[in-house]
Amino acid sequence: MTDTEGASAASRRGHIVRLALFAAFLLGLFYLVAVSRVIDVEDVRRTVAATGPLAPLTYVVVSAVLGAVFVPGPILAAGSGVLFGPVVGLFVTLGATVGTAIITSLVGRRAGRRSARGLLGADRADRLDGLIERHGLWAVVGQRFVPGVSDALASYAFGAFGVPVWQMAVGAFIGSAPRAFVYTALGASISDLSSPLAYAAVAVWCVTAVVGAFATHRGYRHWRRRGRAGNRPGTVPTNEGSPNTHDTAEGP
Image (cartoon, rainbow, N blue to C red; front, side, top):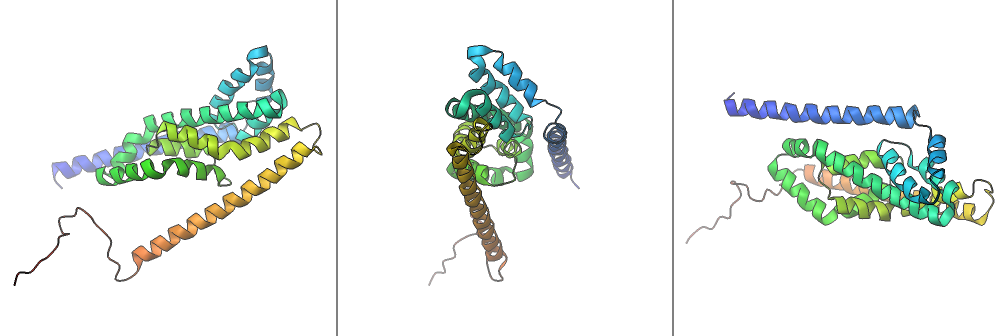
């Protein structure tokens, strides 16, 4: 093994260790906050309510930070509905959602971007950047409709892979709007779950769940088809720019 190969292997191991430590930190934080519930959301609500006229803005900031440390979004959105009602609460929830997306994206980019590019290699990383530039916004929107996926964890990953902050913010706003309405409206209707607003929230939740399941299934089938096409005997992968790729033209 040459010195260059040894240095490359050592650099690769360093990137793997760095990403593994970052993932372990996020999973530990997720367990403490989302599973063990070390943060009392009721105390947070009372503290925010005590700020008076500034309560909506305060809740946006506090909820954005809490969302970034894996406090479940439905609980925060419901709290917004309880405190501010369905209309103001919806905008507060969306503001906090966008704030969480920005925070997690920036942290993910700072902690994992260089290592992700190092593991992918310059060529693959550049191709991924091109895909993100064209489709990153709708990838963020689509992720918000996928059931069972933590938005914060996904946003950390998007940041590590270089999704621009503006795409994260706009995608989170668009993709989270239906669920933001659902949980905020349910929070606002907590004292009367037979109200029309509660029924509307349940209806929107059902539609969102169906759309998310359909989109996930369709995306999986598309991925399977591409995988089978790439592995089919006789299929030659395209390798543009490779030194072995050239046109042959025989002379007379």
